[in-house]
Image (cartoon, rainbow over all chains, first blue to last red; front, top):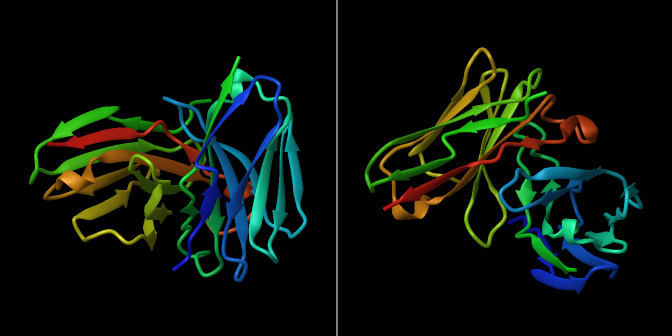
Length: 115
Length: 117
């Protein structure tokens, strides 16, 4: 059974703090990993799609790294702002699902940034 | 450009009833996926349709079915509703469905909140 684990489940930080959270996935049979941001009452929004071991991607103050050999990805937020408050989901796209389009999601990390 | 739209926004049904949820993908997107999200869990894959054909099915009972129309919009149908079907149902569209990379980014709609009483 393929499982995607995210930690921590929730996080409270002060405005200006930098933070990071983890997504763990099966290290064998890797194909792609997605990160999404999901603000309350809005649609999940794609942040990054990562496919290569050692990938580092950045969008503004948010960046992500990927280690496919050990099966983890980190998401970093530098200088957190209240508008960063959201649930951050990672999703694993294993090979064998290329004909099904099946993404396996973690349970998410909910970030609350206090002003 | 309009994003992925879903209707209705909220729905309350009784156990045993049938429900139909609708999704319109982003213009030009040919693939539609359906996910069920229960509180405290990540979205669970239900179906993917590409070019009007079912290309993937998650671990859901046969009470769940879907179809995609020539304009690439999609319907998710659930028969004989159970209390456990109460969830947020998300629809996502993408252009190509089986390649990794930006072309496979999924664009989600706001979801339909289904409550079964």
